[in-house]
Image 1 (cartoon, rainbow, N blue to C red):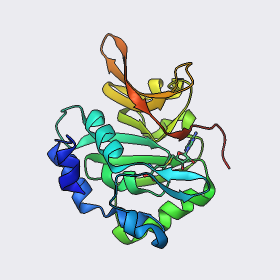
Image 2: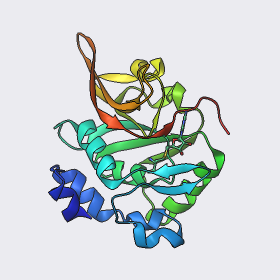
Image 3: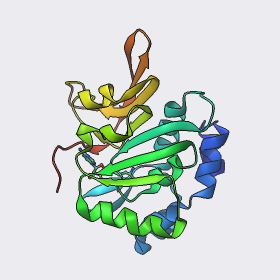
Image 4: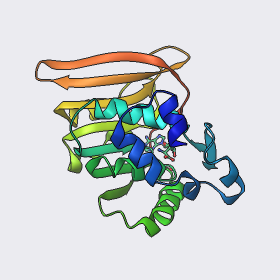
Length: 204
Ligand code: SAH
């Protein structure tokens, strides 16, 4: 999988190393293990999916943005099965990851337990509100897309920090959106089309 990612243009050493170390098959149902290293999104229960490896790698590269590793504190919105949180734990000092579906929050806790990763903080709640107690964040990364980038994420981003998130921005399709917080304000960049599950408010 790592060789394939490199061939697809993933360049960052830290991202490739993390993707080689964290086994994707440990995060999918046993019936899907054979597909764990294919470049496809896979169901993780409750109607949600684990993203394609090359999308995960691309978003992590964008999040790092050539900054030295480790990044400081990072907020992940949409823990899902915990796969990306495990990857993020290798490139930042602390991962705060929040999930709105109790069943998935608990699933991630069970799946991550054997790895004993000390710098992942699993949170249950509405990630549209961010997680103020961990702010300011060097990075915020979302695995679910809303219409816009929620205000709370902008408020909780450190100066010099970056948000990487899918958003529809008033259109019917989603794009990958980057928001950089500079000393002079926020700068938004819209990248390629993507397909993520919807960002929903409240918990379930
Ligand atoms: N990063 C995950 C991908 C999970 S899919 C992984 O590696 O498995 C996106 C997740 O975002 C879903 O589990 C969905 O329930 C969650 N989600 C959607 N809206 C949310 C919100 N407002 N707060 C927290 N999680 C949310």
